[in-house]
Image 1 (tube, helix red, strand yellow):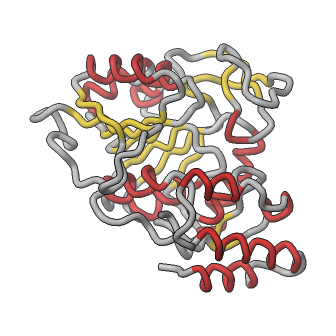
Image 2 (cartoon, rainbow, N blue to C red):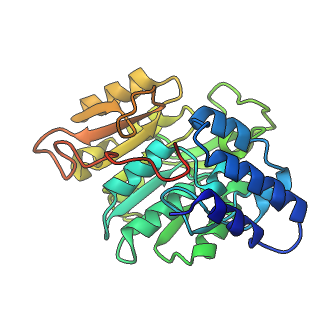
Length: 303
């Protein structure tokens, strides 16, 4: 695992030019590795990294993906530093096994896609769903950087039906959302995208049924879950889902599908979580009972 000093060396060796930016990033990263920063302060500081650094090929210094080449593609620099959403990182690390099928729904620029592809290995499969064109470009770039032939990108939104939809881009690439939802901060002109449902894609043989699913679609999570109701009943995947003011509806849908739903915790910490972990009820699938999830210390640099 990388230390703060290692992180500085990684950033210095990440490309030609931009020396002042790299030096500034090095100072930020060394501070992020210190004990004074919790997740919230760390994330706030990361947002101040210079814009050009958000589009450089770097090597991730922290977290589950430490040592992996990555480009934030104009999205959150915390992806390239490996400090984004430590609870989710640790859960996916513990849940995914070699040979698994993993869905990254709302893949953004591909941080969880790359993490998942590394965990499931060459005999596993990752399906990465992302509708925003700029994000898809960055996603494909990151897949190529790591040479991951086990990833399939589907440039579409997921919902409970097939058909056209509008997507509202935002001031930050990770805030884009379907236009049926309230507009995101810095909303821009909506763009047309295609919507599919998981059940339709599985039923048609376009994708294999999943073992683990991660969902983060800025408030459209209930529609995604309704569109995979049959897959939840038959494949019984474990689900890691972010909640955006839709927690009650998400819990109701998953409970009705025979899942036990609880907040996604990180080790012994009991701070509020923006994610839930949904596990099939006992004797109803691979994830029945209590899976081994997030029981050890957080990755270095993610205090």
